[in-house]
Image 1 (tube, one colour):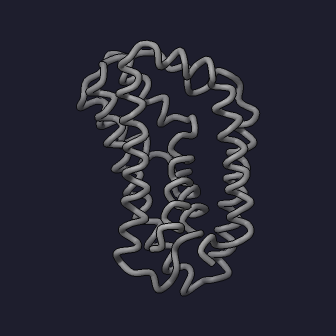
Image 2 (cartoon, one colour):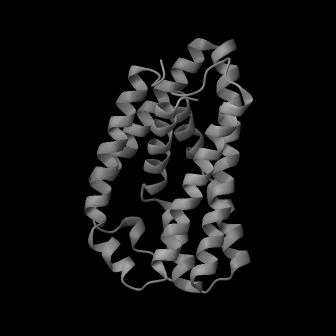
Length: 206
């Protein structure tokens, strides 16, 4: 995979990971309730769930491109519409939302279990990855390239939430995020709308 194409993939994966939502709320709750270790456990297990969905999507997209190109195009457009909806939702979000997470008594094992469940119980991840990975997957893509895509999504997701958990162990970080939640939501919304347009226009590597 060319470096420029991989950088595009990495930026989009980072944007998806940083988008406020139930995953961020989960890491916030476990970090505030149990400290750094439960927060990191939730982050890493969530990344494993993301990697599982990314793997399913990569292999499924390859089959769709070859066997059902019209269906693949329809799914891609549906994914673009979903990204646009997420962008509009983020733009309309206020200062509250996922950044206001209450602390909860927790342990590393409980945090790891819930991190995995939040990822696997979120079928919207499939839609997100279909829209995202449709820009990078080709029918003749090598196993190594597919692995790069999956590990990129998984490592960026885990890395971001680990940083969140570590940062939240310092008491000044959460108030800083809460004070800027409105601007975080706005930036996320604009980026998601731009990504939806990019998906609708066709593959990045095309």
